[in-house]
Length: 168
Image 1 (cartoon, rainbow, N blue to C red):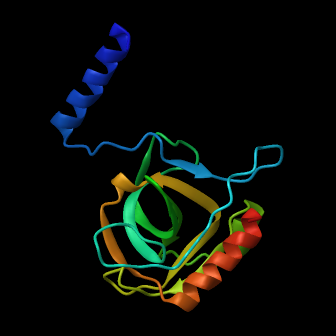
Image 2 (cartoon, one colour):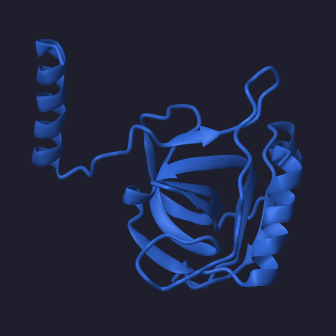
């Protein structure tokens, strides 16, 4: 590492220590299919939730998710784990916001949402939707906690929709 990079890394670490900010995984990257882009590797989902403190397929876990428009920024949110590839979690983000009301606008922007209902990941018991079109590959080490497991029927429905959307 050059002296300049060391200084920048130390400044960033110092800022995080002073402000109490959590480190953000810089390698958290959305995996989206775009015309002309290399196709992402096929995902091999397999339902296997286990209350062992580790992210497992079928579980909803909380982790830092980068914003689409600025991957350097993001927020903690629930994601549904589809697969675990070594140190990487392949997941789809969840929201409690109802996108049925603005479905036309969401479709115009290429966003695909699927209702999955309420679950233990939301302490207020609100119904959730999973975003199908934005496949995330996130570091497993960044997972903060397990929220709950999606039931097998709903998990399989999400996997089928994601497979159709992403071509695997």
